[in-house]
Amino acid sequence: MSVIPGQGDAERIIRLLWRTDDDVVPTAPGPRRALSVGLIIEAAVAVADETGMAGLSMRAVGDRLGRTSMALYTYVADKAELVDLMYDHVHAELGRDRPAGPWRDRVHTWAADLTAMYLRHPWVPEVSYARAVLGPHEQAVLEDLLAALEPLALPPETLRGAAGSLHHLVRGFARTLADAERLGEPDTETWQRRADALAASAPDFAERFPLSVRLSRATGWDPDWRARIEATMRTGIDLLLDGLA
Amino acid sequence: MSVIPGQGDAERIIRLLWRTDDDVVPTAPGPRRALSVGLIIEAAVAVADETGMAGLSMRAVGDRLGRTSMALYTYVADKAELVDLMYDHVHAELGRDRPAGPWRDRVHTWAADLTAMYLRHPWVPEVSYARAVLGPHEQAVLEDLLAALEPLALPPETLRGAAGSLHHLVRGFARTLADAERLGEPDTETWQRRADALAASAPDFAERFPLSVRLSRATGWDPDWRARIEATMRTGIDLLLDGLA
DNA sequence: AACAGTAGCTTATGGCGTAAGGAGTTGAAC
DNA sequence: GTTCAACTCCTTACGCCATAAGCTACTGTT
Image 1 (tube, each protein chain N blue to C red):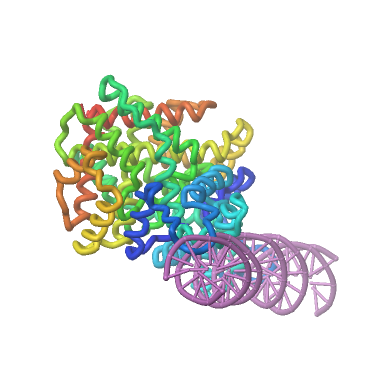
Image 2: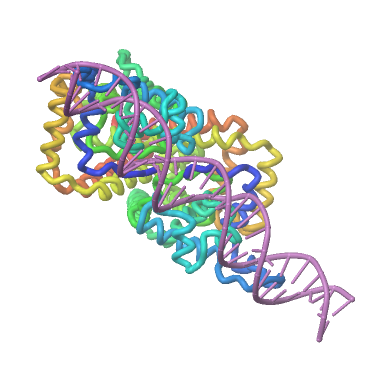
């Protein structure tokens, strides 16, 4: 993982990201193509959804399509390129309708939609988003956020900071949510065993970290960690939006 | 990568994260130990710094210590556990001095220190931070942030949202910075070639994404992308802090 | 009908994490 | 002082992984 596509591939990946159906040129000799970039992307997303990023292998994708792993290399340069394409692909799921209403609600809707997509595809927030250029669907998601913020008529630097920050907030909290879901909610018993282990290893915890302890005590043990994390995210976003108003 | 340590290992990793020097019990039969968990962690961090997460292998760490990869398994259960330990370890680099001064400045200092650490170890922001419990040094970083925010006497839910958000912001922007650094600043020529490729693939870009284009034009082409990204981060943090005041 | 270009296959290479088991070293028990 | 059990570190091996190289069979063009 975390393979960095070289700059030499930049134009190639741009062409693939922004491809249209017309790009398929069937006027070439040779056997008819059994696959397509789109089919491969969809299969790869399905594999990643089911088995996580660790389970995403070229073989697994090929198997799902009834082909060998090497067949994919006709369509895709390497695994890093495939991941780039997958990343853009899932952003197409976000609805592009822009409901009327107060800008704050629209931003929250945008954040909720993005979070929901991240939870449907928990591998997305852990994939690098570094890219020569954005893909069309990522670009659309950014455009929608800018549209929600437009009524505020922010100066460019503020707008850039707000948009980038909102992205990072949603990504970060969504990753926390996805990780929590994957690790599973610890039941009271295992939680207690961990607390004991920590108390044994760090008996002076309360003196060393009084503020952390106070914060932890103030909210107490909440069985519905999912709702808690989502509420924390909403609070964070609202803080940022308060700063804009 | 992205192996999730099972809940069964939770107490083990807690003991390792919060280990003290006394934990080494030399009163056991068998050959004297040539290594230690600490030595292994330091070697692993060095490898990751030099070759990135993709280059971090048990063999590479063993080589650096003059041992085989299998020798590490005496000290560490598996690679995922080692990464957890590495993650906490680098957080020890942050200074724990708490300068007097306005709370806003203190938060910015905290963010700058954390960003600098992330840039010294660019693999850190791409590693999962999901964990049964925080390690001592991560806990200390959180405690320091809470200390900076203490004068505000925020209600718990707000404090939680603010702290989490600030963490995610720094992590997100630091990752952007690290990625940009790794990919390298595209010179004007390659940048132009990419713009051409995009224009060829999406001639209607300006009509489809008017707000993105406007934002991009407003700030123009800045050769010092690093300073730009850092400024964007500061703007984002300030927005959030404005929401607190 | 010949040909050239292509798709997808088999095979091979050099990595990876780590399971299994063996050899040698040591402190403690007698 | 000998025995033993526990321990560290090693070698070997397994089943994965991405992907390079080269092959075969197919097909549009000439």
